[in-house]
Amino acid sequence: MRARLASFGDFKCAHCHAVVSSAHMLSGVNNRNHCPYCLWSCHLDLFAAGDRLSACKAPMKPIGLTMKKGRNKYQREARGELMLIHECVECRTLSINRIAADDDSETVMAVFQESFTLGQQVQAVCQQYGILILKAEDAGIVQTQLYGRAVEIPAISW
Ligand SMILES: [Zn+2]
Ligand SMILES: [Zn+2]
Figure 1 (tube, rainbow, N blue to C red):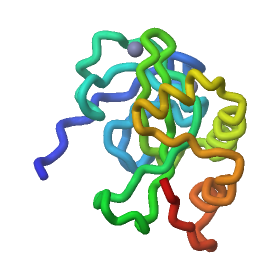
Figure 2 (tube, rainbow, N blue to C red):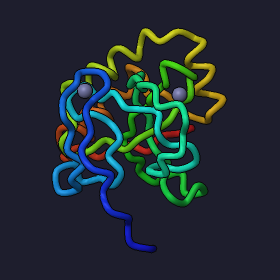
Figure 3 (tube, protein in one colour):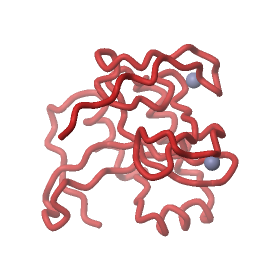
């Protein structure tokens, strides 16, 4: 794996206008692309996280949570990683993003709870992308991932 390019620098959140540090030490993730306070992102990437090739640049709203499948797609028992689903307010593109260490857990929970009211249209689009939005019955998984790992995370069946 080649070394990552220099950080793209701090940015100002397009939604809540907080200045966001892209320092890896704080977020624990490469290519921080969303605000840790309101979790809004920006439509910057086209093909891969961090490529910054998209011409859109519109804000992206956090609309729900999903679980990223393990590296081995045949390994259905693998534990997933909790991910944020962002939807571009301009072109409706969806993207999934890792939750950073300094993201506000309460806000992540709020996004999760709000996602229960998502319209069927958004859910259908998620399906087209192969993204499974976590539902109310997945609350235990979400809590475990956000607040601690004392409880075993059950495998998700797709
Ligand atoms: Zn923000
Ligand atoms: Zn867009």
